[in-house]
Length: 474
Ligand SMILES: *Cc1c(COP(=O)(O)O)cnc(C)c1O
Image (cartoon, rainbow, N blue to C red):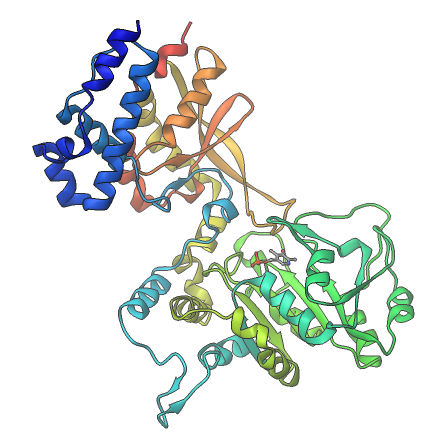
């Protein structure tokens, strides 16, 4: 056996020979010399591996170039758009909020042109990058001053580091949250240089617990929104208003970390009530932090609003420079916040709110429209029905509140393996389709499928490689 293997290995074309083929000329033009040469080397390596383990004929130079083409074309952009049919509107792993058209346009303009980022157009002198948003944020929240950083995790870190570096930060044991990505309140406190002082118990914290803990070494009192869990049963917490009074009496600022935070009363849109940022400010917290890409529906960002003297101190912290936001996002944030000045048309213009506020009947009608084409495309191996499901808001916002929705429920007529295979194949589409497997069905919740994207959705599905999809049928 050694003889034929060695012979076929000898017949493997050299890199230069492959690059000289007409097939490779196209690749060189499209992908450049470096990437093409890399792909050709990889293709030759793969062929060598095959020849070592199996008796086969060495590929020709053109055949190697064709393998290289496959490798190059498989490298689709990692961040290409996909269809989020998971039913989770603000899916952290899928990039959270999709932006409003106005925000997209503003970001594109800022990308393409120079902008007065830190430049005062009125008198031609240096300006502040926060100036553009300060007015809007104050108007929308009722706060005296505002600043913007990379995300809400950064906002909390910066507040802790500014006011509790080498000092104590007081927080209830019921609010020591962990959110995704290893953001744990105790760890963030440690990294910010603050000594965490826990008060109360997991289920009950009283005013006296805070009063007893606050002393001359206290830099900050924290109230943290328990975004992704809820403590129920025999519970007690100190409300923000009362806690603000306790902190004020000792001259220590209260930071209220709202997490998601909303600028509008969500109950107007049929959703559960969340405290708005304006309420949190009004309740007396000296600082309030919240996210840009959760319920607010903008790009990733963290907002800190509150007392001017405190915001000034935050802005003078050298860490602020490391956590600042670039012009693209500032442009998108400004455009997003501007939409909130016209609440009547907000749900129409802000995709996050539009998706969250969508009625079940509308979603179900859409699922029924799509059902025949999807059933036909998936073939006899699958049963495609329209069924009820529950969407989630996501990103830890209102964790226990689900929204009645409608999905294409795909079930395998054969083994369950077929369903897993289908889910995997849907992820390889030019525009990957991400659903959720639950109760023996692949659920494609169409809440987040814009009506305008239906044609695109079906055209994309037409690219589905149905080979092997029926293989698991008994
Ligand atoms: C989500 C959240 C954060 C972190 O916000 P990001 O914008 O994701 O960095 C911090 N605190 C709370 C309470 C949250 O819910």
